[in-house]
Amino acid sequence: QNWRGSTEGAEGRWQDYILYRHTPFFLKAVL
Image 1 (spheres, rainbow, N blue to C red):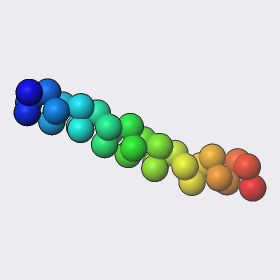
Image 2 (tube, rainbow, N blue to C red):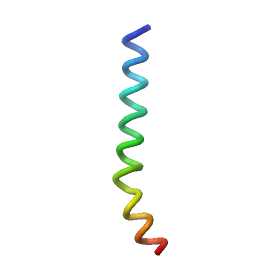
Image 3 (cartoon, rainbow, N blue to C red):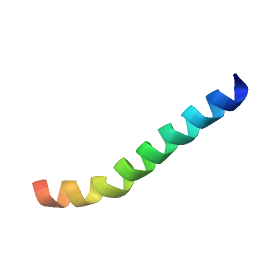
Image 4 (spheres, rainbow, N blue to C red):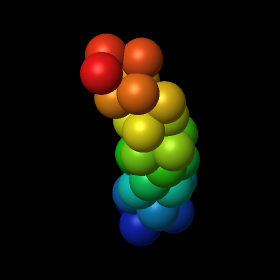
């Protein structure tokens, strides 16, 4: 179960990393 939890956590961080990296671009497009 711990291994599965780690996998889900990694996916969550990956999604957050992508959103964080693309956020400035979207903000610039909106502004």
